[in-house]
Image (cartoon, rainbow, N blue to C red):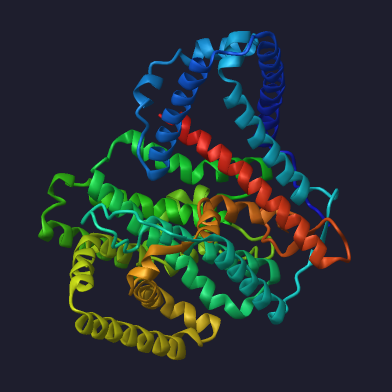
Length: 506
């Protein structure tokens, strides 16, 4: 039974805001159609100019997705005032609507996505069904996707290292996106089929995402030294833009989507660690002190009883969460549990990023050494990695859920390091990636949020997604196929929105 809860001021505000946007977008599309049908075909030179402009926009977009600001950003600062633009929008000025037609389209798409979320998860229009785990089916689907990906999307890359200028490709972008992609697939299937037997593996996957937060943000700030307010605001916007609208429209607490506040927190901590006295970041001793300070802060807040509540109680309005199924737990329990599990791994990511150039140089020398020496060293590394991985699996991974969670914050770096060693021990492995998984790994945050409402169902504000969305009752596999196809389609729509954000960022 669906419990949509009372209508909130946020939901009313969103509805009143999106309706005029949708109407003006439709009108803007009509104006564009009218304009294009009345104009003669442009000269080919004009088309070339437009193509060139489009190429520049694509370049800007690529830079933004890599983490920087576009070259056209400074120009966009000088746009018309908000007040004038708002008046032109309200009066439906033709030239204004034509100029901002794509903006209106993207805003309308976002509104349509959120409306679809509400229909799926807060109404009885579509049904729900119970989760059912079958190990044979679960493994079959995982292996099938791997085989299809290997047969259709295996690609060799020849990128050059930013440090050495050579094709070492240690922990390159293609590899990390592939890594995020296959973890995301397992994470989603774990939720869909309630595959509780791989709970400990899912904890490792989330730790790996947080590790990448430390690794990626440290690499960016350490290399580019861009601690500007614009860059910081851009990062916070990307991490929280979509989840904020989901919270408003679906009347959920921020902590329901715990991955978002976790990534936001650890991004802030990396930013603070490198941003404070940033001009001294090149000094090894200063960087060692900063990393040590990060460990001390985590120990102080999470290891000493009582300190966590003192630090985070003022933000309970934002980070508090009450599960309707467990109303007696403290409001900050979920935040303490989730953030505490991965409290150290982001620092490990920073350390790995700091030593990334050093490891690349060592690997470069290793690849240039004689065959006997190279093979023996690589064999030794692989043997040690496999032994450590086996011991971790036997002694830690096989523990029950509660016992494992107690050790997870201190041991999650072990399987991550083992994976990195095995994934990068030959040049051939580093050169290739499965682009299907890389594609799936491009917007994992939004994919994670979307699963709650259009793949699974919670049926109530702040509820955990304990049910499956059912469009074709009594046909679980056909239903799985259909809602997964729609899920991927919505994901693609959000990718368009994210690219547009990059293109119009300031």
